[in-house]
Length: 199
Image (tube, rainbow, N blue to C red):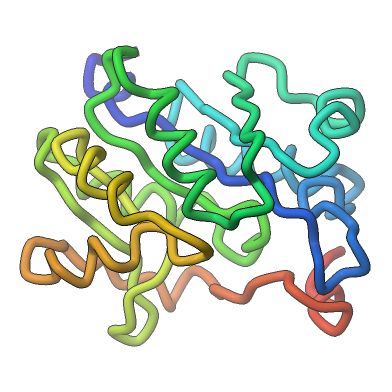
């Protein structure tokens, strides 16, 4: 493992309760015979993240029981119902002091974004001031790479379901956009209709 590999940690936000899915936690939705959270961890690992922190919330004990998350750092977000912002803050806080110099932030409900897109954005890492984001036909999306120098600023503005959006808007000029539309489809699994995307 090179130093560079260990410096970019995968941060998977998997705490959502699936409110529009009848209260089925997204982490436990089945995809290719495994819980979605397991699939998402495998994608981060395939993209080169040797350290993966997973933020859990809804039915966290069930997720721990049913998903194979061996080797991951599992982080409980007791405030998961307050939205993705609280999970992002919890996840970044869990990385502080670990030696990670950047976080590759991934969402559990985007299985159309695979390892190739993740690896492209991860390659945007230069140092702890790095900011990089996937783009789809020029429009910014996920995953996002946040250098450690930005974590405090992101955490201070991450509220509700907005995550890092406000901070990234303020720092637009610093973000390296990485086009990924040729290798990924950035749909979300939010509603019953979206379940057609799962295999």
